[in-house]
Each structure stands twice: as C-alpha cells, then as structure tokens.
Image (cartoon, rainbow, N blue to C red; front, side, top):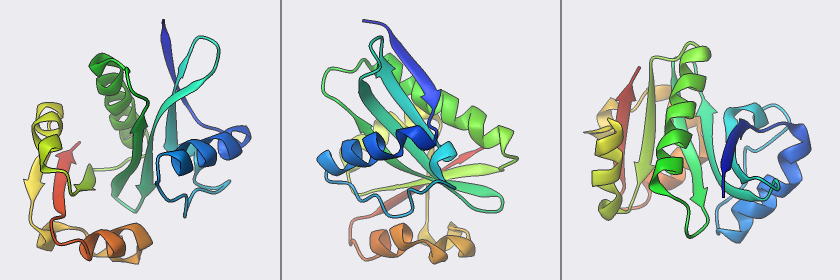
Length: 148
C-alpha cells in the first residue's frame, strides 16, 4: 500500500489529537497555530498511519510526537524525517533537537544524522516548553541534535 506524507492543517486537528492520545502522547501545544508544524503519514484511503511534529523556536525546532502504527516501513519513517528537515529549512531554522529515553532508538537517530548532545547545549528558549521541562525530569533522557 502506498503512503503519502503531507503537512497537517486545521481540519486534521481532531484526528491528530485522537491518534496521539491513542499512543499515550500528550497533545498540549497542538493548536490551530502549531498544526502546520506537523506532518502526517497516511495510506491511500487517508487513514492516519504516522505523525511527526515540531515545536518551533527562533532558530531551532524540537521534534516531538513521532508515532507510527505497527507495520510501517522504515523507508516511510526516513521520508517523514526528511520532510521535517525540509520544513525546518523552509522555516529558516539552524537545527533540530529531539529528546528520548529509549536508548535502543539511538542507532536509528544516528543513521538519520542526529548527534548526542549534553543538556547544556539545549537552547535556553527550549526551557519555556512544557515538553522539555517534563523530559528534563526523566532521569534517562537523551538529547540529540541535527544541524541544518
């Protein structure tokens, strides 16, 4: 089955919130103003199969809400990340950050070009983010950066 990746719009807000909630992810910060920083992976009939979002700051983006349904091809996930890099470049950003507490995911992110960074390297404006404040309270959080 062929997959399509597209930028989310206001009409997608409800279905994206449900999709993220089913994956036990928070939807704080997902609003009419931020929806266009989310990408959707859909199958041919429009069924949502994955998402990747970005919390935008002045020069950097914080990736979040990576969810894919079981059975999605790795290729589709790579394309989702590639499209997010293009979106970040389009928005004039200098880099992307992500946080994870799943060390098993590190090789995947490193293949994508992310490099591990110390917490001290996180842009100070990220501390305004509820998501980052939560992540900082998780002992085994790992931060990674992708330079654009």
